[in-house]
Every structure is written in structure tokens, then in C-alpha cells.
Length: 74
Image 1 (spheres, rainbow, N blue to C red):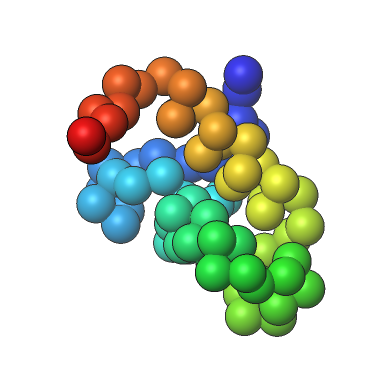
Image 2: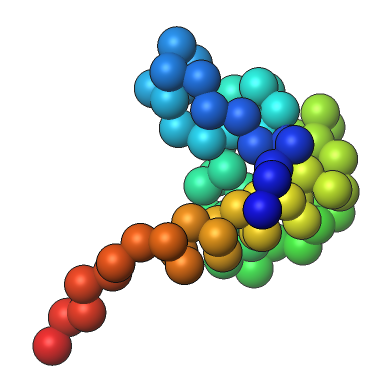
């Protein structure tokens, strides 16, 4: 899967995946969604974001989780 809105730049934000070089980490958006924020609230908090940015942030997070081994706690 190719991501046009997710950028990774080692010279920016420590190389964490961000939305369109905006210095808004993908993880920030995912965290806001996990806390129950609605898309409209996130867009108000970050006016430079577009609705498709949020959708791609979710797709990217899902892809990353599928590619990693996650240790289960017993």
C-alpha cells in the first residue's frame, strides 16, 4: 500500500511518520481518535489537516500493525 499523505523525514520530528510534512505525527491523530474525538474536532484542532489525512493516518496505522510482531502479555 502506498501512502501519499504520510511522510517520514529523519530531519523532522525525529523521523516519526507525519501527515504531509506538517509536523503532525500520525500517532497524534490516532491517539485523538482513540480518545473519542470526532473528525470535525480534530480538523478544528489542526486546521491544516484535511479529512483524507485522517483516513490515511488510520490506514497507515493498520498497515504498520500488520507488519510487526507484537508481544502479547500473559
